Amino acid sequence: MRYPQGGGLTAERRAFRERIRMEAAEMFAAGQDNTVVAKQLRVSVRSVQRWRTAWQDGDRQALTSKGSAARPKLSEALFAVLEQELARGPVAHGWRDQTWTLARIKTLIGRRFHKSLSLSAIAEMLHRHGFSHQVPARRAMERDENAVTGWVEDTWPQVEASRRRSTAGSSSRTRPASR
View 1 (cartoon, rainbow, N blue to C red):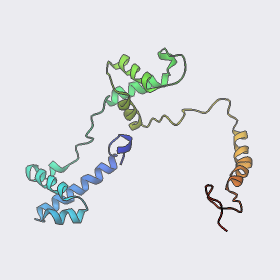
View 2 (spheres, helix red, strand yellow; view 1 turned 90 degrees about the horizontal axis):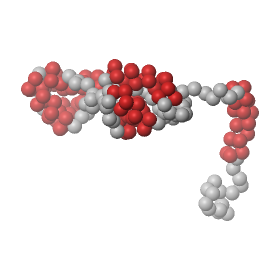
View 3 (cartoon, one colour; view 1 turned 180 degrees about the vertical axis):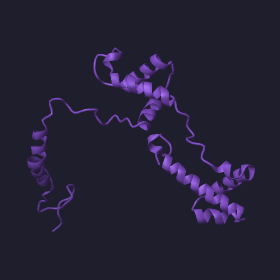
């Protein structure tokens, strides 16, 4: 599930849940009780009750997935345009440095699409489309890969070993060793 990131269910998870509802429809047609259906499909009885009501009103078609419950803030076409604008960089849009912030993206969306979105909505939308504030788009030009590789292979194991080396005392740093 993707709820913690605010993106709703993935397409695979939505299809899985739809298959469960279709199995429930077959059980409804066979005349099985709600509690039996719930136990067999490992879902709540309340969900089965809702599904049965929808099934009675509209047959199996009523149990198909309707897609994400949240409407996208920008259509896919507008998001593609936003992505192109973001790729041009902040300097091309009048800012002095190459840092995109949510506030700057909000301003860009307002200028370009005449829409006002909250910062959290923008963050969710960007995350849903694979953007991350933690991963830089490219490495520093000054980065020396050979020096980094040498440090990781030679220096880091020594640093790590000294950190893990235990003393004769207790493993806890808050209490002395009992003798």
